[in-house]
Every structure is written in C-alpha cells, then in structure tokens.
Amino acid sequence: MERIRLKQINEEIIYEKLENGLDIYLYNKEGITNNYVTFTTKFGSIYNEFVPLGESKMKKVPYGVAHFLEHKVFAQKEDPQPEEFFSKSGALCNAYTTFKNTTYLFSGPNNLKENVLYLLDYVQSPYFTEENVESEKGIITQEIHMCDDNPTDVMYEYIRKNTFFNNPFKDSIIGTTSDINKITKEILFTCYNTFYHPNNMFLVITGNFNEEELLNAIKENQMKKQFKNEKKIKLKEYKEPDRVVKSKEVIKMDTPVPKVSYNIKIPLENQKMDIRKYNLYLFIIFSSLFDDTSDFDREAKNENLITNSLYFNLLNCDTHALVSLINETISYDKLVDKIENTLKNISIKEEDLDRKKKVLISNELFSFENIEVINDMIVDNIIFNNTIENNMIDLLKSLNIEELNEVISNLNLENKAVVILKK
Image (tube, rainbow, N blue to C red; front, side, top):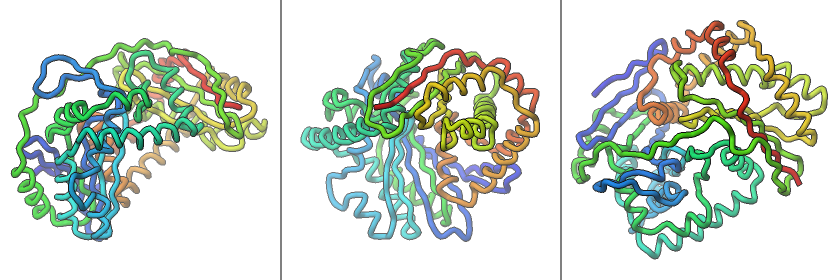
C-alpha cells in the first residue's frame, strides 16, 4: 500500500496495484456521509484500431463500439440488474463513455463493500448474445437520431470533423447507424477481452470507509477470478497535419438563434513544455481574452453581438489541442471578425495572470470538499498521463508572465475552422 501525499493540501490518496494488474485508488475522509465509486477501463471511442489480446495483427472495429460495449456490460444475464441491486441500498448507478475511457459508477451512503464487490462482478461478467446485441442496436440508433436532432450535438460533431483528417477524435463517440449495424457479438468480445483486462483498468473509491477491510475484500474478490496474461496493448498511431479539413461551413438546421463556433487547431507534437502546464497557459490565455470579465465580452455585449458570454472549451486531442469559442448570435460574421481581431494582438497583464492563478488554486483546494469532484480528478489524472499530479498547487504557483508571453509568442492560430448552424 502506497500513500500519495498531495503537497500543500494536507491530503493523501492510497494506491495499491493488485497481482492481476488492477490499480486501486482510495480517498478516505472522516465526516463524509456518502461514497462515490468509479471502475474505469482505458477504452474509449478513439481506440478502434489495435492488436487484440492473443493476436498479432492490427484490427479495426466499427466506430461507436466502446459506447455499445458500455450498454451491454451494464446488462446482466441474471437479475438483479445493476439499477435494481444498487437501489436496494439507496445507491444510484450509471456509466459513461468518452474519447479515452469507459467508466462504471455508483454513489450511496450504505453497503459500500457489498456495492463495490457487485460493481467488480457485473463489469467483469459480460453477457453478449446475438439476440441481445441485435436488440441493443435499435436502442442506440434511437440515441443517435436524438443527437442528430440536437443542434449542440451536431455542432460539436462538425467541429471535430472539420478540424481533423486522421486523428480519431474526429469521429463520434456514439458512432453512426452504419457503424452500429456492423457490430457483432464477436467484435464486442474481442474489445472486451483486450481492454477490460484488470491491467488496463482502475478502481477509484472516495468517501468514508475502513481502508484495510475494503482492500482485503477487493483482493479476495479478484483472486477468485482468472484473466489471461496481457502485454501492453498496441494501438495504431496516427499522423495528423496542422491544417484543418474545412475552414468554414454553414450547416442548415432548425435552431431558433444561429450558433457559431470558432475553433483553433494548435499543434502539440513539438511542444517542449510539460503538457499539463501548457494546457493551463492555454486556459489562462483564452479565458482572459473571452470570459465574462474580458474587454471582448463587455464590448461584444455593448455592440449587441452577444447576450451571454462565449463558452470556451479546450480539448486535448493528443496530436493537437482544440480550442473552441462558442455562442449564439444573429450577427455571426461580425462575431467571428471580432474574435479574429482580438486574437491578432494578444496581450495579458501580469495582474490578470495572478488573478487567474488565485482562482485555479482556490478551485483546487475547495475540490476536496466534494468526493465526486475528487474522484473525477483522480480519473482525469490517470487518463491524462497515467499518474496523479501530487503537486498541483506548486505547479499553479509556478506559472509566470515570462513563460506565458513565450507561449503567446509561439502560438500558431492560423489553423481555424468556423462552424455555423442556422435555419
């Protein structure tokens, strides 16, 4: 058992790696009355080309298979089903799929040990048949149609599609109806056996519990199960150009007010700065320029270009960072021009940097008041670079105006994709 000390926060996370490869992270805090548990596989929508367990050749599976697999793992051969089991102790359960991971979770104040063991058991007991795979296709097809009718979902799909050529982030997490119809029971088992191995998974438990008792129960549970030996999973590598696929596209869609997204593709391949620090600088740059305290925000509202502040999103896509500035406006061309004018001469004062740092440090400290936020933080850390950042406060304090100006001077903003949705 290892204790990961989080410096300057006076908190710790317990870590243990089991013999079968499963990583366990525990955050235990007295006075908390609830528990939040996540069981995650490092298998998301971007991993659709890989060498399966026990094979030697690269295999490509349909897009959307990670999300499809999430649905089917959640369905068990015998009752009680997960929702029914957890509800008996007042717990809520769910699951979700992202670009890089699939996570199964529950939260509840009671029966923690029993619920954790059930979570392990149902995720590690897949039940796929030709019949239940076929029936699931209809359910997911309905979900796809719902997304196709949602302007926000459509915008995000076009943002990535118009930005990336080869990077698998370009494709939908849920897939298309054509993709879904290609999924078979055999494909699900291939993906499950490769990516749902304990060596590719981790369990995070945050709440108030007896650490030793819970760890012993988990170890006993895992020792009863057998898994094939697995080496590191080989994934297909992609080369992605810096240019965008399409610099501008107008999508006709029934939306009351036109939506506009200004997207910038920033190369990361030759970035020498620590990627976590670089992302922090990008956040500070774009939030300083466009958040509700910025000159841009005040001027755009006075000019009636916008009524609400721009939504800023930063997505790390491995080869590139994707920065998106999104809003609703009838004057979308004028808004795009104003964004571009703001980006021509970026200048951020040291006092603005210090203000952003104080907010980020405060958020980091207050996050330990919420066990769901702590759990998400641990999951994000592991998915991001397979380790927990144990010195985040010092990292935030180390941000300085000299480095910020260097990042600004080297920032390539030429590769942009504008997406507009309107009637």
